[in-house]
Image (cartoon, rainbow, N blue to C red):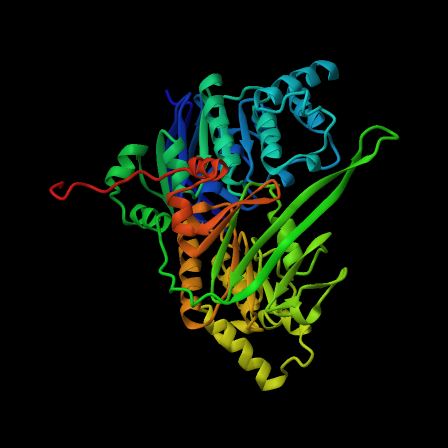
Amino acid sequence: MSLLSIQNLSLSIHGTAILHEVSLDVAAGEIVAITGESGSGKSMTAFATMGLLPQGAQTSGKIALEGSNLLALSEAQMCSLRGRRIGMVFQEPMTALNPVQTIGAQVAETIRIHEKVSRHEALSRARAMLTRVGLPEARFPLGRYPHELSGGQRQRVVIAMAIALRPRLLIADEPTTALDVTTQARILELLRDLTKDFGMGLLMITHDLAVVADLADRIVVMQRGRVVETGATTQVFRDMHHPYTKALFAASTHRVDLPKPPPPVPLLEVRNVTRSYRGARHGFFGPRLETQAVKAVSFTLNRGERLGLVGESGCGKSTLTRAILGLEPVQSGVILLGGAPVWTGNLPNLAVRRQMQVVFQDPYGSFNPRHRVSRLITEPFHLLENPPQGAARSAKIADALTAVGLRPEDADKYSHEFSGGQRQRLAIARALINDPALIVFDEAVSALDVSVRAQVLDLLAELCRNRPLSYLFISHDLSVVRTITDRVMVMQAGEIVEQGPTEQVFAYPQHPYTRKLLAAVPQLPDIRKAPDAS
């Protein structure tokens, strides 16, 4: 008998059909991955299993956990199951954790809710569970708060909360999307080991097929609320009967065709830039220790060149980027754009700053939902001494929207009326509208589905063919950096440890840290067949 058996699950919310007769099984000790684009029904299947559906939801079919139909249970009965027999790991650990409670208290809370134990015993068990997920007491005391941990460490706390009572089923909803490659590899290894050690079933929800290939025993491919293909991981990747599965695989391995960069003419020059922060005191009267976030970094980005910047969280990428954009002063060194300094003393040079724009990771979070597109994408106009007005302004809006594959009439809509990929196109339109000399892409495609990501990358390549686009592309997704940049820099502990032509660095990495990053990237299987294969 399967640990979890979902049979013919259909779901509608306020009359709108979301899931259509979804069926899947998870055995004890098995890892099953549900994959598909946003809106395919992956998360709704998980929420139905957890009993966390919104008001207005109507379900039919059966969700059985060890023979017990979860859809027939009351909310009180489901509350007794959540955390005890079913655990869940959410995508964003910072929103899943309480910022005003210590990590020890949050893990212990799960134990005390379901078992009548003392606070001391709950904390003792919480300490053991945090140690099991790689957060030993010596380095990570129970009294730490979530903001004192890195993204990967916070995700480990969320996993510890989910497995504190050794549930029979663990659901992980995109648990590694926002993590860098080495942290992602460690979290995936942890989930694999926990599944084996505890004998629990793991239902993994992800849009990353490379993660699926490296982790799952079986795959369930969903499209528009339906299961379109399922089977053993090796079998699905080998056969791929459904066109949608083939399309997902093609998008995961998509490579863009960048035009050759023009002859090198320096645009952005970073020379011996250093930036440090004052840390906390060690002891009541102890001195404040300084942490060097950026250590004598130097590089040049040429006009028309696409330069990548990769490294783990905390390596100094964000600090360096803020300094380049004129948002954070440096202690020493100089940053020039077109030969002019970005900083004049401790003040940003506004004439230079208006020549740079940035595209952020989350387009929805970077837009004011109360404003229409026409206002959102013209925000950079406030940097201009004489911004265009009237017909000239309308023409600039129409040109920017057309350049990113949208329509001029979209200017009258609000950001919530667009899909995630379309919102990122709006963010690119906003960055282009002033014709900047330099654009910084800060994890601009990491939150997108593989097919949408491929479309946005194709858009960037098309823009490079149509205009002299120069950009700094920052990402933890090395496969994206490989296809969308001419040169790449690898940053570790505030220093550039390796840089060079992208293909050369990826094919023949020289620095041990670069080799470590590349080794941590999950790989899709090679599905090429021999010429005479059927």
